[in-house]
Image 1 (cartoon, rainbow, N blue to C red):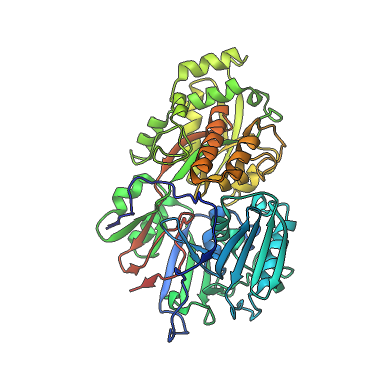
Image 2 (cartoon, rainbow, N blue to C red; image 1 turned 90 degrees about the horizontal axis):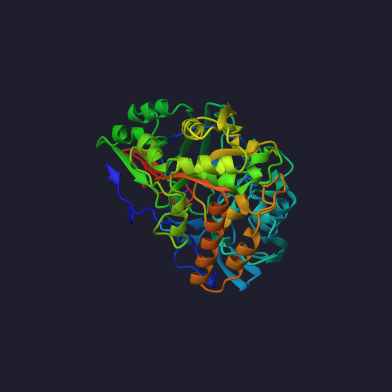
Length: 512
């Protein structure tokens, strides 16, 4: 049974407008008389990788679902791309570089410490000090943070942002108890979420268990007593697990399984924002691999990607074979990038012109379901003489490997991003993925135009110019787009996917 999305077009719902003062009516606060003991039953989800850390300031976006039960966020994201109150009940832009949050009063962490302005400010200050954080780009834009009073937090920014609410609904918005900072945040998380971590019932590499938090500020949204996340690395095994009722929910990991699970007894819930498979180039200056400094070489590699074949062969025609990072219905899409459609003859000509008639060798790190994507590129590039070796890395560590300063490029997957967050985290000069300190040409100047634009239309044009430049320069090479889909048992109610979700947050989900 397929749950239809608002639109089938997989449109991107990025927030473009400047943030104005918000006194929210769309709060998610629980009403009086709610059952304080949580819900009933157990919700079991399957994940492809083991949890790497429970520290929100060190976790990768791809593992956000492990942290969702334990940590509430300052802002909550809705499936349609809008936002509602979380730990913060309202917010405002005082000016383009000053952002204020007003917190709920009387909310506590699971260790009974207050979620007050001092605690929230301490979280931001800790993030600002962590130079290895995957969320570094967000924290790096904060000049200082102030606890104005018990419930008011002020962020003084280095520059304007179009992305604040989206970030505060994700990892940077997850608040930890300050008492846990110097304890063991990787393995003993203490948050203010709807569930608490059950270390005794959890087993690394097998299952992570969370129990309902009886003191959560919105008890009506906690509809199950227990949340379990089981590690099932093999995609076929995960599909069989949801078919056999061993788990309640999985992320669809391959389009080849869509017909199997769409059997009338399971729910297929699709996210409104697509994922993007692409090759990210870390070494654009040729420090590790000399050919990569030549724009002609990067263009040749782009022209050698057969997106139609990828869509037909691996996505069973359910993808979008465009060379652009964005789909045609996005305000960031530029049709000019379609000139990078598959053209192996031109790719060979460019390689020869650049002095690499016989090609060259490159190594991809990969793991799990991404391996077949890497193998697809390996076959395509072999046709123009580029010899790709694929090295397997531990599941959950690809992001770390890509940031190690030793990796030239890697096929990867962008999930639940915005134009600004993807740029800042992945492509900006000095970003966490620019450990080689590369020259990215005009991209920083283009991004500045987008960040300082005063209208949604100007912001859209600004980010369109940024991504067109990235694609045309060959700093990223799009392979294809996919529709993120969760498969759930028929008796699971309330499954929704926000724009950044791979698996849904367990709030408002019930069993039975």
